[in-house]
Image (cartoon, rainbow, N blue to C red):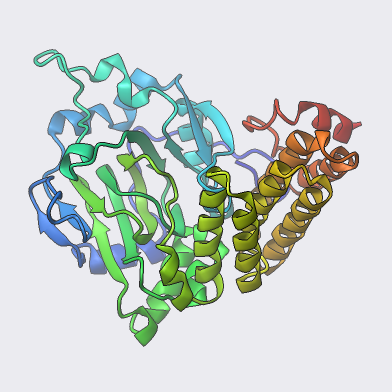
Length: 424
């Protein structure tokens, strides 16, 4: 983790997951620890009742919780490589991650950092931590990590298992994806959710809300506003699971260090049904349209993807994900000039978001620029002669903002040629 001067801050790792230490978060937790508007259940079957969020109680076993205590987890899987990212990057980049480090390094270097502007968390579906042989029961010969979601919702689609480890105050701003079941082993996690058709005000979708306590503080200010009457709150305690139906809007905040595993139906960041976007405004409308634009692009309907991305940018000119979709769609049409312009416009949007941020976040700013530089330096280099030149300039800008931003970045190899030129 770096401070504003770019120096690495490393703290000695604790032998246990830390409880909520932030005064604001601790006060909220003490007052609202038992607050949960979700339906409660002791069963994990939602096939006929899966249209609403649910808190499933007694969802873990003592053996499973012990296996994910800090010492036990690091002893078993500390050298395994995991992917992690700044929370806002998950949303801005559509679920992507920034870096790959060992789980031990993450807990010692990133998880224990006290700089809220650089908070990062593991949300990893690529490593085999959840499939480790040390998790096999000697009695049954099966993994002690359950796989319940597909059976619970009677779905025939694949399920992606995800390791989730985040520090005190880490969070995700409002976003959507297919149905998920998150089992919390340690810590507390606040969920703020709304059904797909609920219209919410712009502040809910502020990119700075990726700093969990900033999100929580802002939400508390407006919790009793008429515009928030259809938003549900739930503090999830350990030893429970939260089931969230597909398409539901949700944001999360860790209250203390939180360790969980999630199961997500394959399908990614599925947006609200298109008709609902007609009722939405501003950032919410833009985010919904950006999601649909990406879906059109993946389906090969590039013209519709471009039109929808442009419509998203009319609603919010700083909707960065829409710029990425616009770029890839223009590239698919072999229109290098417009693709490069969309990426340079994305960089300007990132700059403007950084200028507006209440809390400076040089690492987020730098890593967002590096993702833009990757697109310019690699896919677009064959379509436009000036793409690499723009990419090199943006890498230099990123390194000036956060000198260590390329360190352990999963884009490092893809950016190697451009990065070398930027360093010269």
